[in-house]
Image (cartoon, rainbow, N blue to C red; front, side, top):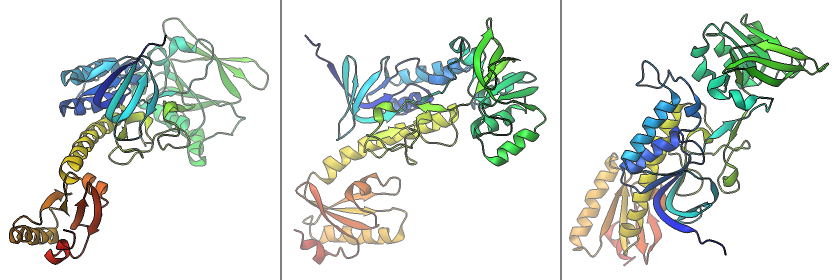
Amino acid sequence: MAREKKVEEYDVVIIGGGAAGLTAGIYSGRAKLKTILIEKSLVGGLATYTNEIENYPGFPEGTTGLGLMELFQKQAKKFGVKFKGTDVKSVDLKGPIKTVETFRTTYKAKTVIIASGGRPRITRAENEEEFLFDKGISFCATCDAAANTGKDVLVIGSGDAAVEEGMFLTKFANKVIVSVMHEEGKMDCNEIAKAEALENPKMEFIWNTVCKRFEGEEHLTNVVLTDLRNGSEVNVPVDTCFEFIGYIPNTEIFKGIIDMTDRGYVLVNDKMETNVEGVFSAGDVTEKFLKQVSTAVGDGAVAGYAAERYIAETEQYNSQILAKNQFVYVYDASCPNCQNKMLEIEAIETKTEGKISFCKVDVYKSKGLSDRMGVSVFPSVAVVKDGAIVDVLTEDFSQSVLETYL
């Protein structure tokens, strides 16, 4: 007999426990929203594998990724965020209440924040798993370049990211060796980056090669490449291997539901809103220019705040705007014309002794409510009847015009 799933209700369900998800949790939890964060593996995400972080503000002596993420989680827990270590199997994001399914539990939520991050594409060469992240294989030059000052490093890949990160590494490393699977002179990056890389005296290229094996005791010391022309092995003694062969966003369960790029990154606006109402996304899972802990934190802050505003505006829209037949004056407090019109509508209220009444909505800080009403011109008056917006007046909302709706 199938076991019946437990159902839990929340204001916010956050999918993913990296820097973005944890920050979103801090913001929503602090706003007194009932919040749960679901993470299938290690809370803190990829940042926990970074041995040293020197570019996160507030830590002049640097910090470890694990240590920093533990602080994030502690702070989220302080604000009442609940954590669940499990995998999300499916989602239903339609309608005002979203559903997030795990193996044992169905989570119902007013909002969902997708912060599922992603994972670097790996070579799948022999012994690779033994040296991932802080044991010799890295995926972030910005994170780990300083730790490789004066050392020899290997870069795998020849796309724009690989070449640009490789050139950045030359500012720190003694030598940057690049393994390229193509024949000499052919690379996957743009021509400008290619020319600069070939002229860089600290960069060396090993053409027609792919990674075969990683070697070392406690830490990586040697990478064995395969020469594609004759199958021979090429030993490359290095201190660190940087792999830049792609990044895979964890968005499989959202395909066909959320708008994404052709590579699977979630598309969001400046409020971290997706194309689905009440669903937000933050961090490395989104289409963005820079993927760092600091940018993930910024995304998470916006998403957490936006989720709180969405819930508040939804409740206000239903309970104050649509709940009774009335007129809604929508204005921008910074607009002189809106201020003048405010005096006019207040005079109408007084003259009609409340027969004509207004709910007043200021869009100065947020246009969330006006967007729901379909109002884009300010000032305007929306006409509410029987729980729906039946008309929007943008020019003449004099007493005589308003009386025609009574």
